[in-house]
Image (cartoon, rainbow over all chains, first blue to last red; front, side):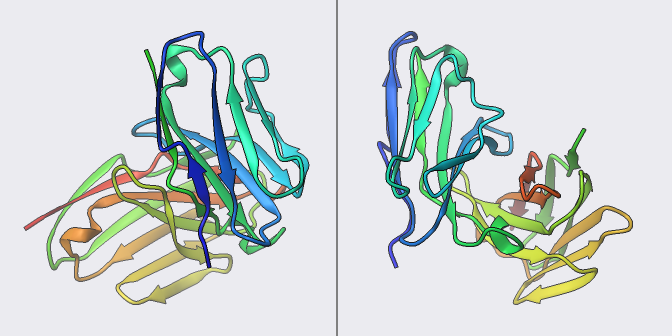
Length: 116
Length: 109
């Protein structure tokens, strides 16, 4: 079974530029998450999708971040314009059940963003 | 507010046993999860507890006390490859995962 695919692995941009990250979850996984992880910290949820609907985007900085999951499969996270504090690893994860062990997430390798 | 506390860093010796503690205060409880994260890599699932008691899986065990809001991850026969960060996460009443900051475990020969 293929794992969660993410691209690009690394991205370096200047502040105020834009960037987009792509994620393809494990086949059949209805729930998809985007997390931001800063070095030395736990993952911070940006947005959670259930199929193509948004479950939670309360911590997504909506003035600069956007995400979509149009067909309930793959997803794109965009940042525009980027700030220095957006330098982090962006992790995509998926899970297959709504309750109980829904906390058993499968993560992609992450996209490391450096904003200069 | 919701909060998960775990030590920032721990050091242990190869072949020994180490216990990583996690205390939590959340709005409801629907399970506690431990993840392992090697430097530069993504987290991988280790264990799940929803009832009180000990869950054993090879060299790793995880314990839960819901009344105390407490869990620990026990690693036995430590190997150098166990050097990693260990993340505690709790699923609250809304089935949202609340994450701790992680415990960096350093294994010395």
